[in-house]
Length: 285
Length: 267
Image (cartoon, rainbow over all chains, first blue to last red; front, top):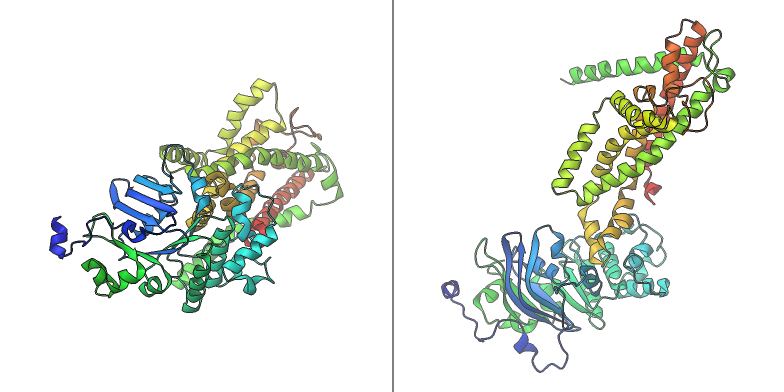
């Protein structure tokens, strides 16, 4: 591969950077597996041949410079990518062994199992805090006769927001501060009880205190859920995640690729590839 | 420059204010008990417009029942699904139709409905008004629904809520204030239309509570008839009716403003 010679970096392991080697020996099967995923916006290829395994009950961080496809990849995991007209996907994404892109699979049902929290907090403006949390349950069609009060309290506690809002659940969702709104969105995503929670730079629009609260919440979430988080904040990835995937784009207009994947500690202290090391040490970004 | 702009505002407002004050001045004198409870007379003291008030209310209500759901749903379609060629076509047709001369709408319904159902009716009048309402409501609804941020739609879809439910339960409620405003403004505009009613509702000197049978008295038509009369008393009643119409439009516009401002208006 010419371009890799120019950069002077060859992967030392012969295998593809999918973490498969890393997780061999772990008894728990990965909750999601990505096989040769390529993603397109119309004729433009945004992502090429990504292979990755997402470990169950762990936090996987996706890092890399802007424009290298991290967010696109994240949206490929819950079929949000195809909402854009002309978007399409090649390859397979397995959730508990089943390809979510197979013929006849309803994207709506995929999204109930793989939830998402977005970069900018987006609570529903016409609903109260209480209604926001249960919106996914009420409108998602899950006719569970669950005690809604219990769900609201549990998810708000998991999102580290309960104490701040327990006395004002009827207030509008937008009456909260930015950090609180984002935690509300996390609680809303949790109420649907997905298996995997995707987070697209959830704290990038927030202050450090809110960011810390969200990171704390993430650590708690690990017990019951799997988290995949895209972040520009490398320190956040280093301190909060178990596995890290580094995305890279070789030149302008080329598709993004998963350049390296492994345990977070290794990626940040002793990465295999030069570009990874350059990025995590801040030589470019 | 500021002086020029200010002067232009004054010039623009003068005709408007003049109309309002003159109509109020001439029409207020006509407002008495007989005006509101009596029937029109062809000569003499002028009578009243009670039947016209009732008729206009019935016709405009019927036009709204027909026009509002169609217009709002068309607007929602254009905003949420209308990115393709069909959407552009519909948009073009709607834009053109907002400019249809109102008498053309009336003649159209005359040919289509009045001639085929054997006569004038309030229903035919309502149909012609609805034709005028629908494109306006559709475009204003589309505009307001489009303004709902995409982040809201994404949040809903990301929760695994199907697209149609996202639109009905999340997007439209967020836009409800604006939709109501557009609807009220369009109703206000149509309440005073005279030309489309000439050959559809036709007008009447008596009460008619059945919009499907027989000519329907209409306030704008009564203004028209009264103005042509040779009798001062009748003309006076015409002024009173004109004032009433202006006030109806004013109230509808005020309601529209209130609806838009109130945060609780959207559920």
